[in-house]
Length: 414
Ligand code: AMP
Ligand code: MG
Image (cartoon, rainbow, N blue to C red; front, side, top):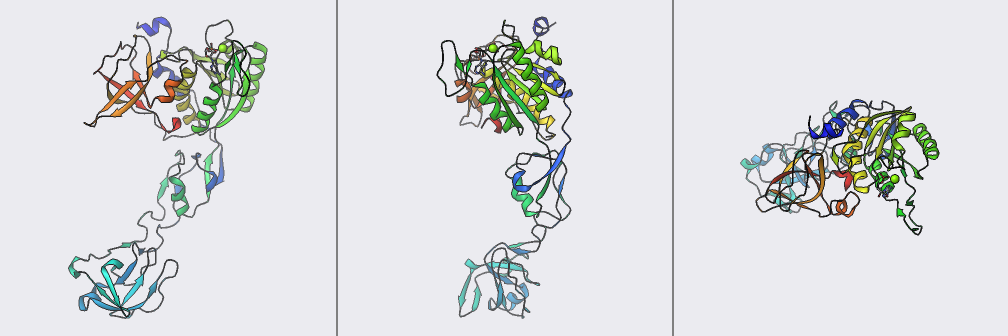
């Protein structure tokens, strides 16, 4: 038996597997206009109804030419114009050129567009400063369907829409977007010591910082946040709020009260109203994390210490919400080897997620330094960090020069 088993702590990987295996993705879909669809997960593939571009067009301001005309003379009269939105419509006489602008339709028979900078205009006669053999057919022509062809699957079901996808979908002319409903996540802080912002602190009180971090992460993870406030350490009040949250949301997230203190009621209430999936992980910080099910929702009980709360949201709740949201393309941050430029204090027994500051040295290698104080209540370490330094369960103190794995913060922390 390893030390985690003897202490009854569940390895993070096991906890994550268990948690994900119990979550069924939301299937309820709706249609949104494109401008409201950012951050939603696609409920169906997006296939293009048209070619993009829908017609061959010019990539330059210049002159449309036929190579057979240029073979006879490098000076040609202008036969007409093709502007963006106003194509050339006449008959293109032999031995002439057509003035053309960027985005304008390519006239029938055109082999290439010669950029304006390679021409000179004398009384409507255009002289081309080119060598004919250097002009390749289709130069400066963007062919029909060059970007997207009709019928092509552009984005797949399960993809979460980013700002980069929105203009792409607009270019296809699609405005009705089939999306999965965002998971609703109700959350509250527990603790008699917690004071809302805007009020002076009484003796023994602290400000409720977790609720602010939890809310922003829920929204960054692509979910709808339902803030149920600060709840005192009172079993009856907690029970009522648990039930209210369970009714309103797909997931209930609490902070605090999940450890073994005399005012820690979260786990008992979860046990009473639903089922505990697991409790107490071999992770540092964040050991007292509880997962379970309430009658109509999943439950995640975060530890009260602020770094632990945010870390467990990031490492455990984030992938769970991604699965629930149907975001099948979601990927966990990748481990990158980095050379330690400072000592990292550690004892074997739990996987440490220490806060680090990485940089890339002049050899192109990742290096990482500690942020200093790694206390689970010292939140400034999260604020100044740009990565987690993930130290394996059985690893001991890390000396300068050793290689460690780092995980760069993903977009949810920026
Ligand atoms: P608990 O998990 O309730 O035992 O709390 C552990 C530590 O986290 C204690 O020092 C609490 O005061 C602190 N804490 C609990 N909830 C919050 C919160 N919402 N914001 C900031 N600190 C908290
Ligand atoms: Mg508490």
